[in-house]
Amino acid sequence: AWAAPPPARGADGMVRAPGVFSEDGPDPGSALLAAALPEVLPARLADLGAGWGYLSAAALTRRGVEHIDLVEAEAVSLDCARVNVADPRAAFHWADATRWAPEAPVGGVICNPPFHIGRAADPSLGRAFVAAAGRMLTREGQLWLVANRSLPYEATLAETFRTVRELEGDRTYKLFHATRPRA
Image 1 (cartoon, rainbow, N blue to C red):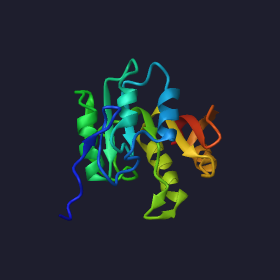
Image 2: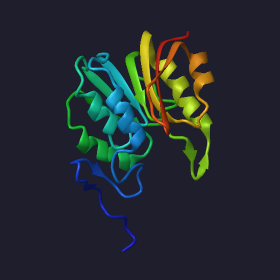
Image 3: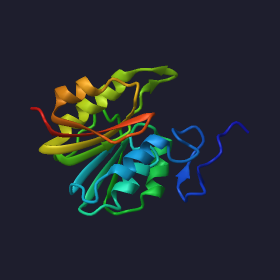
Image 4: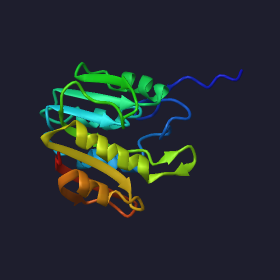
C-alpha cells in the first residue's frame, strides 16, 4: 500500500515516474535548450544529469550524433530514460555526473544541472557540473547548458572554457554555449 505508483507514459509519449524531476512533462528550461541545440552535433556526447532522457532524445534527432552517454544519479529517472531513449547509440550510467568520466573524451556535453540538494538551493552543484563537463571534453569540445537566470554560473564557465557565449534565453532561463575547455 505504501509503494509509489510505477512509471507511466505521459501525453507526450515519454515515461516518467512520480517524484522525479519534471514528472509532469519537459521543464521549460530543458525545452528551451532542446530547441536551441544546433542541427549538427558532435559525434560523441554526454548528457549530465540526464533525468528521464528528454535532452538526450532531442540530441539524437540531430545529425552527426553517433553515441550519447546519459549520466544520472537517480535510478528511477535512469530507468525511465532507458525506455524513452530506446536508441542503440545511447549508453546509460547510474552515476554522479560530477565524478563520472567517459571512456574517451567527448565532443559535446548537454545539461540542465540540478541546483538543489534536498530543498536547499545550492549553486555549487551546477558549478560542479560545469567543471565536470570541462574535464570530459576534447580540446575543441562544446557545452550547451541551461540555468535559471538567478544562478551565478558565468564565472565558473569563464574559468573552465576559453569561449563562453550566452544564447537567446527567456525571462526565466539563460542558455550558454561554451567551447574549448581550459587544460
